[in-house]
Length: 256
View 1 (tube, rainbow, N blue to C red):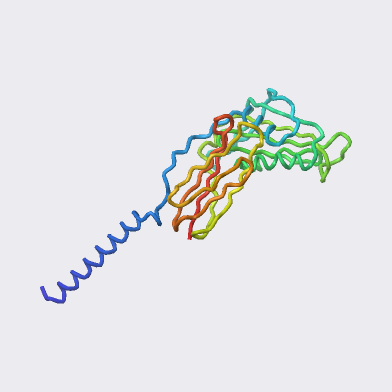
View 2 (tube, rainbow, N blue to C red):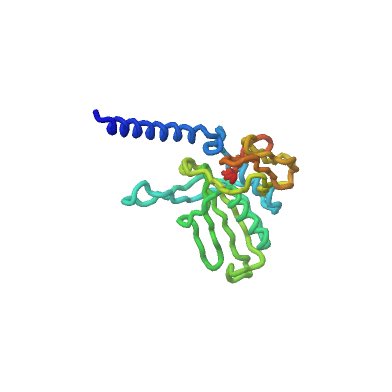
């Protein structure tokens, strides 16, 4: 074999081998593949626990929890099929003559708990609205109605409110909500989480201390972190009520 051909084969081999070594380095480099492994406990919350948390955190004078029913149309398994309407056993709470800003607290409660709005199960008219939300194991209707002396819901100051929730495992495989953020190495940053001021509610942070340092945290203050070095990492916040996991927020952090 000519010397030039042998040299060319050797160079190709050395180049391929160097590419292989570099790819292995990328896989093992903690700055590039720095995701800490977290075992996420599945969040299972009953209708009663959810409605009690809603009452506690909003501070609105809802009634006690009552038995109810809820009709929900679940998505069809294929485009050729139509959705199935199911009458579910549910729980409900209600309150009369709620201020508009208090009703917005209830809407925010659903958003902050990573519920997904479902237009197909929602209903709107001049005097009432029924907003549908679902999570991994609950389906809920947030209903607000005009007062008897009101002709419509067009920006009224007060309204009657009812919340109905039923347990369902239909959406259990829906994706976990994830927040993405970028910071610079050596910078501080804050993460704000909504929380009840009542006793028994607490957020706990789980993170990789090789990449982030957390400052001392008080119950009603934001979580403050310091970026230690460049890389990608994850912060998982678990929300507990009396030791029971009821919610979770996930932040993926890129440190540049």
